[in-house]
Image 1 (tube, helix red, strand yellow):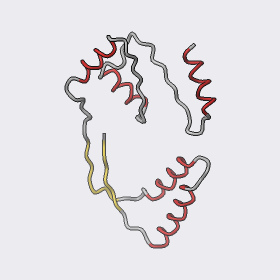
Image 2: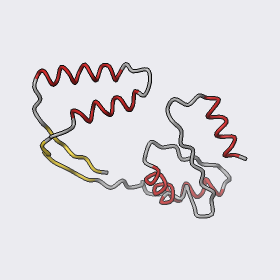
Image 3: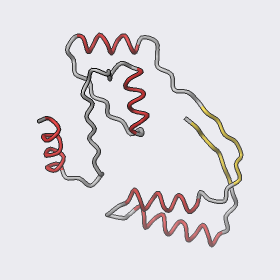
Image 4: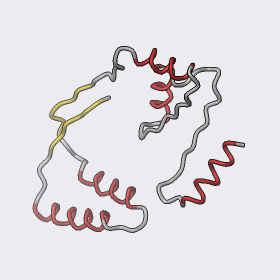
Amino acid sequence: RTLVLGRRKIGEQEFAQWLKNYEQAQSSMTDRENALAKVAEALESQMDIVGATGIEDKLQVGVEETILRLRFAGIKLWVLTGDKLETARNIGYSTKVLSDEMEVMELNVSNDISAQALRSELKKMHQ
């Protein structure tokens, strides 16, 4: 994972306009996440990079063996994550939650999906 630290000075007028846009995005009833991302992107431009760092996520000792034991005991495991699909897959395989013998199903839905629509999608996957 990478963290980049940046900074820039903004004037009072620019900040006042940004704050107004942020408050509108925050209270949006539709597509709030996208609206907030656009507002953040507007502020996070023309910055001076102050520093950067990278870290490698490491599993605790014994995670792979524990997950294998759970699987051999017949316990079903799900991977629920906010990570990107590629990251989730890599972690899944490295921890032995996923294996090449498994059928891996992906459920990718938007935030505004109804419970009924979600049930319908899950039923289709299970058939």
